[in-house]
Amino acid sequence: MSILDLGCGNGLLVERLRGDGFNAIGIDPNLPESKSFGYLLKRSAYRTEFSDNSFDCIICIETIEHLEPRVYGEIRRIGKDGCKLIMTTPKKRWNTLIETLSSLGLADPLVTPHINLVDPLDLPFRLERAASFMGLEWYGIYSIIKA
Image 1 (cartoon, one colour):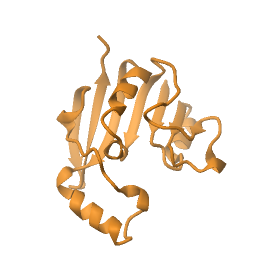
Image 2 (cartoon, rainbow, N blue to C red):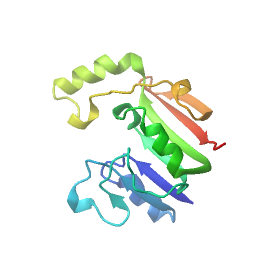
Image 3 (tube, one colour):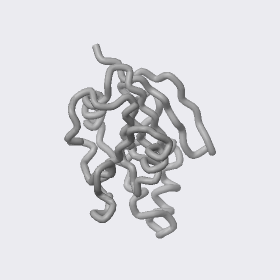
Image 4 (spheres, rainbow, N blue to C red):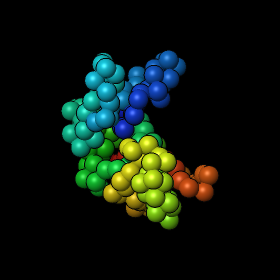
């Protein structure tokens, strides 16, 4: 199974998945050069440089809110037909609190700004399951269906 962690941060999830035997790759535009190698790549989510239909699963943990909706086309392009998209993102109603904590230096500077706060039904993929956790965030599991 080929997995892309889109917005992989420091790559911990990718390394864990690889340790469990998965073919996982992570991309992040903020990845330090020292960590960028082989399966951890400093790349943009808008132009991933991957071939069409490359991945069985795309993971997007606390990332979509930082990306413009034009990223959906790239996700659709690189995901195989039936690709699972697993995503978490903050709920819209908590954004003011998150932005305030960030401005006070009480959150990682990469946490904000949020430019694409979405609800599960806002995304142009087939929603399979969505739920809330910890009251602040929601997760969604989607299928990418190609016509």
